[in-house]
Image (cartoon, chains in turn yellow, green):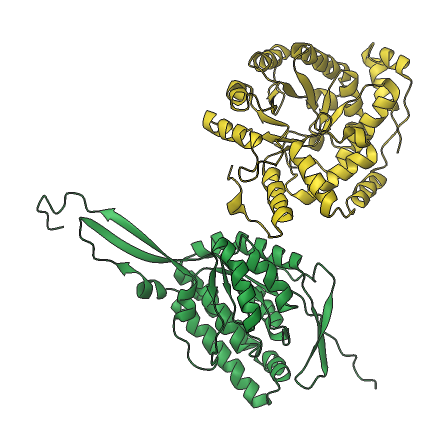
Length: 319
Length: 294
C-alpha cells in the first residue's frame, strides 16, 4: 500500500499554516484497515528457523531499549538494569549488548554511569510522560534536564488531546520545540500512543506529522495504556517511514513499544521491517523494541539454540 | 428407519486447562489389545512438551501456595467426577488392557479409591515427614516439606489408568504441578482423565497430559532446565538410563522405574519422592537464660 504524497519541494510548504497542514494530512490516502491487518497477519506466519533464527535473536537483543518506567524505580534498580543491558547473559559473553536503557529523566545520571564505556545508550522519556498533559515550558524544561544529565535519546509524547481536536500545528510546533531542546546531542523519538488515536488514518497522519516536524524515530506507544504496539500499527508506521524516505531522502527510525513479550513476536516484527521498510532498517540505529520482559525470553531462546535444551526463568535475571 | 450416525470422539491433549491438538498436527492410531482401531490420539511434539512445562510453571505458584486442606478438597472432587464417568472409563480400560467388563470395572473402582486415598494425604504428609528437631542450642528447629516444583511424569506403559493415577495423584497431592506423558500404547484413559480434571476444581496447568512417543517426549522433558523432577515409571531400562543422564544436568530429582504392583496399596514412597525439606532455625532468645518457663 504505497502512499502517494506531494514531492519534497511541496513538503516545505505544508507546515506553513494550520490549514495547509490539515489539508496535507487529510489528503493522505485512507488506510485499508482489513488489508493492513491481513498483510500484518500474513507476514507473521513466516517460519524463521536455525541460523536465521539465531541471527534474528541476536539482532533483536541488540535492538532492545531495556525499559523501566515505574514510580517505584530506585537508583539500585536502574543500576541493575544498566548491568543487564551491558551483559544481557552473564553466562555467555557473546550475547550482544542491548541498544539502550530507557528511564525517567531523574534517573538518567544513574543510568549513564551504569552503562559508561559500553556503547549502550541512555534514553529518557520526557515531556510529562506518559500523559503529556503539561504546559510547553514544563515539557521543555523536562527535556533540557534529561539532555543536560547526558541522555542520548529523548522519548517525547505528543499532545493527543490537541491532535484529536485537530490542532495539528500545535502538535507540530511542540515537536519542533522539543527537537530544538534536544540539540545536536540527543536523538528524538516521538510517541504517538497509537492506542489512543482511534483509527489507522490517524496513525498515518501522526506519523507524517512527526516526521515533518523532525522526529528521528517514531514510536507506537508508552506502554501505559491497554493497546500498545501491534503488528498492524507498526506495519503502518513502517510504510510511512519508507514513503517519507522515498520522497525526502530522510530516514526515520521506528520503535514499537509495549506488549512485545516473546521471541516469536519480536521475530514477526523483524519480518515486518525487512519486508516493508527494507534491510536498511534492520539495525538498532533505525529500529528498536521498547520492552523489558522480552529480553529474558530472547535470552532463553538463545540458550536453547546454543545448548539444545529448553531453558527456564531460573537462568535469567528477575527484573 | 435409519441407524443413527455414530459420533466419533476426537481425543485431544490437556495443556494449561485447555484441550489443544498437537502443535505438530500429527496423530497416531490407537488400537485395543487385539489390534482393532479405537481412535486417533495426538502425537505430541517437543514443542507441546515445552508449552506444557510453561503451563505447569505458571500454575505452580497458586497450587503449591494453596492450603493442604484445600488441595485435599479439590482432589476429592476429582474422585467424585471420576465416579460419575465410571462407565466410560470402564469401557476404555477394558479395551486398552483387554480386560473383561467386570475386571475393568474393578480396576476403575480401585483407581477412584486410590485417588481418594491420596486426597486424604494432602494435609497429613507434613506431619509425617516434617516436625521439630532437637538441637543443642537455644533454637526451635523445624522441618517442613515443600513441593519440588514442575514434575515430568512418564506414566506406566501397561496399567493405563490405575497405574497413571498411582503416579500422578501423589505428585500433585503435595503441591507439585505435573506434565504427564501418557502410556504410548494406551493413552485414551489418560486423555479422558484430562476432561475430568477440567471439570473438577483443579486449576488449569496443574496437570498437563501429553500423548505420543514416550521416548520422543521424554528426551526434551528430561533435559528441560525448568523441570525440577522426573518420574521414569513408564520408561524401559535403556531409555531410563539415557534420561537420567540428561536429567543430571540441572540436578533433577529422578524416580527410577521398578517393578510395581499397581493394585497393591502404595506406601508414602511416591508422596515423599518429590518433596524438599525446608528447615528453619528460630532463636528462642534469652528465654532460657532469664529463667522464663515459656
